Image (cartoon, rainbow, N blue to C red; front, side, top):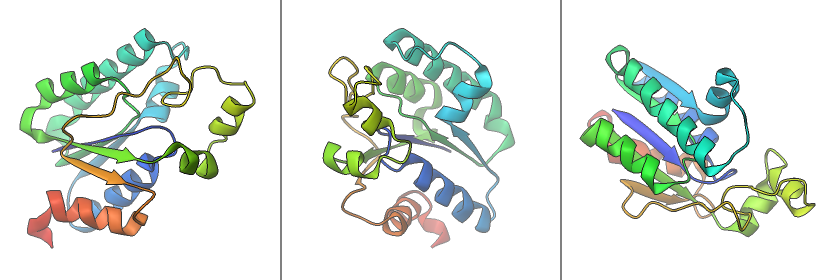
Length: 172
């Protein structure tokens, strides 16, 4: 199974993917986590964050996850993946094994959380293309995710429990 977290920066992808990794390992699953930021850094590619570069990076993540399928029970992917076309491609490649989780959060809460300081930098004009925040860098929300969580309305623990109950209920 592939658990694919999508959402803008600060929506909770890292927090929930790390918590899920730990929870599943405690239940005996063989689990691997692919983090979008770490993947991009490891690839040492041009970080222009253009639409084309983002799509190419997301396609490389899909290929990477494909190469890991036989090694793990669950692969957790934590990546903004802002465009419907790449999430659709992931769905085509992984089929019913893909569980897309959309982490939604209003802009004012994202600005107040701002774990990486990206929103403050964007507000100062230092980032012109912050995905889902800058006018020229849209985030296209999933139309039919397997699960959508408003991370401003529930705690990380409650969100984790919802994910486990939804996709791993046999372990409850």
